[in-house]
Length: 351
Image 1 (cartoon, rainbow, N blue to C red):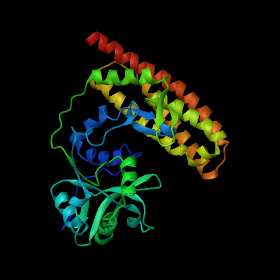
Image 2: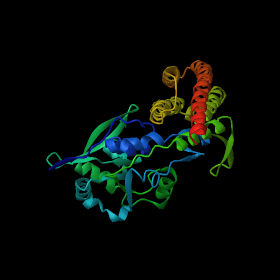
Image 3: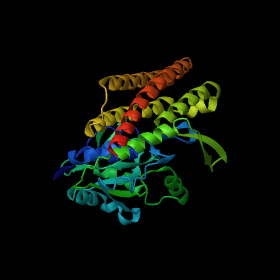
Image 4: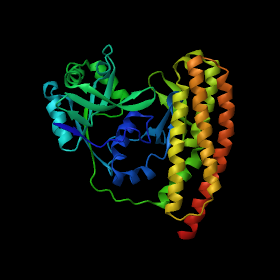
């Protein structure tokens, strides 16, 4: 028997694996896509100048945030024995659940063991003894298969984890349970709200020029944090300066990846804003979204420059990115102010 559940491999949120897996399911079901329009509307930069989706310095909670669109059920490792893993996967897939399973990812890639990661299973093939799952390669998600025996071995490697390894996984991971079952809700009632739209824009505007502080318990250090996508520009500009003067930061920091997270967010943000303005019949001018498209394309150029820097190690690309980002930020201010004022005026009139 062969069973493949719907999956959107190339979805609109490819930059965070824990978010990607949920969007891969949600965007595969047309009735759930409206959920994405007024969710995941914020990003921030916290410790280490890393950029993530979330609000007020916290990533979106993976157990509760999707509750209107997905059913989430967590299971402990001891509830699923490695010898019963494949029958368990087959049963859950047949019931419409997507198993999200923690395993030794390296073994699925034919590499030396030791890399813990979760895998979203969306299908199986008994005849060829294969499991289907999304796989990230060269910053692009693709469909991949693994043999039943290999997948079972990758899962079985966690039968005897040390407490230290488990402790580290609890600190680092965003999916929380060793085994999580995800299922799309059969019904979702779309309720777009102009007040949610206004609150989102108000928060972004208020936080744009604020600097917050986060405390890192690992080394007792204080790190600035920037909330909202406008604030993220400040973080990425500061990161450029640090790359030029701090060799250790330069070695560890993934500048192109964080630039791309802003770029991907802005693609969704502009698209959702235009849809919502149209949805609420809020007057706008097409020129606003010509500017929006220009911003997105400019950010893509920054990502490409960031990749060139990382590939060549040529620091001359960093000042170019910094100056380009300053120019883009000025355009962002113009675009954002147009949006905010249009929504604010409409709310006042229709209050």
